[in-house]
Image 1 (spheres, one colour):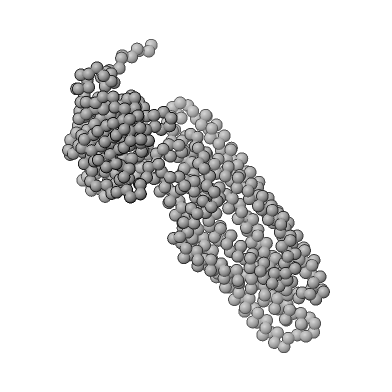
Image 2: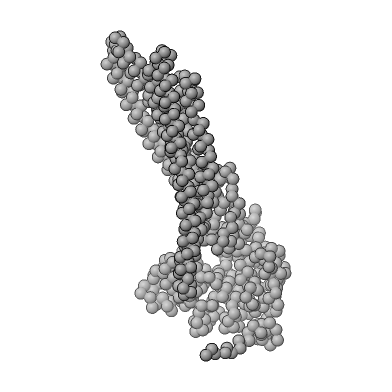
Length: 595
């Protein structure tokens, strides 16, 4: 399916979203930053023992003026050098550990937040998105963002501090000489800036292409029965191959742009070293600079281009991570169409009275419901019938606020559902939808999903009422049998019965059955209808079905057509009229046999 591109968040929006995940680890970040500062100070001090040895021990000795305490000075300098290196190693260890672990914690918080936010986003949003693309955002895109965060904390911050410190010390030693070094860097800055923009665009394209590949793989494997039944293997292979080649081309473009960085940095470094050697040597010969200070400059210069080279490579990670972070933050920036309003009140125990007043609803330009009014009394069983697309499943979605009407009010026990807390509403409603969703685990686990903490007796009773025990008894491990992903090793009817048992276990005051018996045979359907009728009284039940055996014993049948309530009554009352229900219930004309 084609996934529309959401508005791309700006850099400040991305940073603001990422910054909130830094709050839980701010102590570690502060300590890591302090360790980085110590490491920078130690790195700046590292060349100075060499300068002391050259200017105060070696040069006087070469001039025939050896210091009387040269051995003592040399021993002290060596000890100081070893201490500096040891302190630098310790500071580097804690800086890397604290910064990198903070980045991993931030990325983990981001991943959990994205997944949780996707759970809250409305069905309208999920209806426009590809599952494969969303999965890529939760996994691969968060991973790229994680790399960016970790590298920013562990590489960018220490190296920027180091560059600043070196520049300050060099400028204090010899301002003109330092300006000469800086004059060789504009080509590097310009090339880095231009390549960064191109690489970010290429990375953005690559991330979108990767999402399309993941989406095609998810859809193709999820519909493998259909693919094989219609001999679509070659078509699917070609489609996937085209998308995979698009991803390959985008990735190769990123690699090509990435390969430009190192040569530019190396050439710039060589140019600076040549300039420093030429002019520095002349200043030493002229007596304007000591050899030790020149060695400090050369040491800084060697150290200077190591962080620059790392930052150049880091730019690639930042470009990829930035493109991935935009896709992740785009999900976090989405606001659910259905959410708790400010001041939403807790939901009291419901009796189950449902009122739909003047409901208008559409999924696009075409209206589904237009001014629907429907009252369902507490403890009443009401069946909704009507042609396909009349809005029956929409009504079932309006009651638990899976969607909100464009106009009109849905009330539970007289309360406008938009003024109640969502979790409170849905915790008092059991649902069996047309598309049965099962999790990988045992049959027992999938039934218990309806009520966490349910007792063994409650689970077994729900399995009996939902007719799960009828087929579970034939399985090797009974209710402890592990079912495949989405219940792949169960039949459609068996999956439906697990979903019904789950809803029964929930034992909520409102029960919504959306085509609950669509995959059951006639015998099982009859038993199930009887089991549902034998449930404790007082439960309000909303049933959507086409089979008369499922709905004929309902307290009331409401015919939905043309966007509203066409007629209602008991089965016998509606059959006595020459109306829409009787035409819907009329047996289909005999089919002509094909010879």
